Image (cartoon, rainbow, N blue to C red; front, side):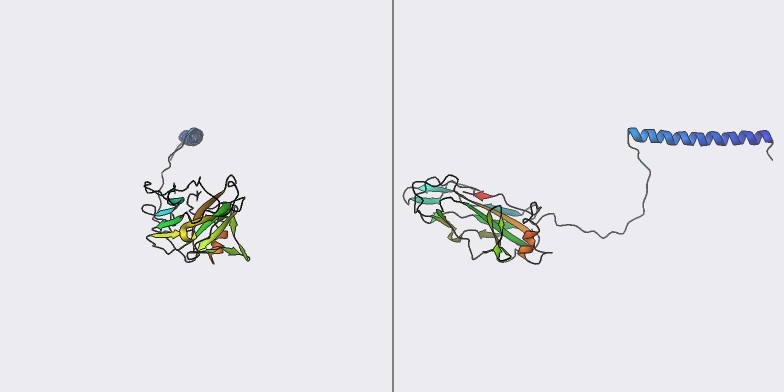
Length: 239
């Protein structure tokens, strides 16, 4: 049995230990304010259902989503624009700087190309015409595209007309090329002495998943029909 002096000594030691623990916590707090601490942790194994979102509608390794066209040049013999056979690649713009009033069958073949699509998708294309003289005549390739309609009107985006591919692009599509313009050409009417400055056609193409939407109009309204969207789009092409 401890005498009174020994009990007092033991009680004092306990107080010192508590004071030391308090000090240690305060030091930890001070260290936490100056840097980060590593805490010893452990956790049991977790039963997990893994859900992985498709990283993109085009295979990240071998997929292709482009909108481009054949490079053209002026041909004196035919008096029209023809394919530039010296070009090794397609381009996203052409300059037509020798247009005469009434020139017909001017070569222009913007084409959307898709390879290795990872999910069923809607494919859209937009066409924006800047033509103050109403000199340009063109038509959409209606074997592949139809006007995207909503509330009885064709949908537009930033002044461009929106079209949708008639059939969905199926998951696993390996190689698909879709011409935009009928007969791959445009025509010019009588525009006087010269075309208005800035006369051009601008094309763009968009791809969005079809799952989760009632139709193409619903998909567009909830993706690229909004101010911002995170679905793939090609760089714009134009002339």
